[in-house]
Figure 1 (cartoon, rainbow, N blue to C red):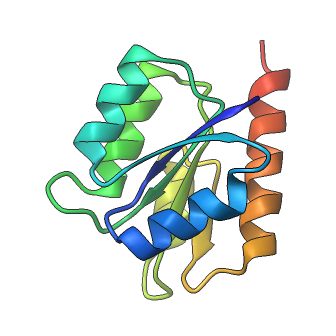
Figure 2 (tube, rainbow, N blue to C red):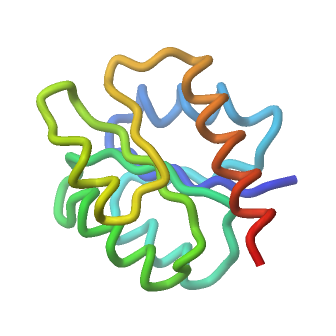
Length: 121
């Protein structure tokens, strides 16, 4: 079963993402970028989802460091509508989801990300 890392400080959103993706993926959810990087350094994941606004290290820095640990890892950024999404794509994000997002959007984006990761050599 593909492994997904979810980095989200809001418990409601974190639990929703796990509930939506949990039937098809092994979801590991943490509340900080630091915790996420620790997990990435100890195990393989097929994709990651990170919120932009996190306590401590933000999602943009998490994206940069996650890409250093695994340049192939597709990282999906979750952001508010007032963000400049292009800067995340330029920084190597696989894609982004605007809050409030739809469940179907999450499922489709993660499915594409996992498929992309598993077809790269």
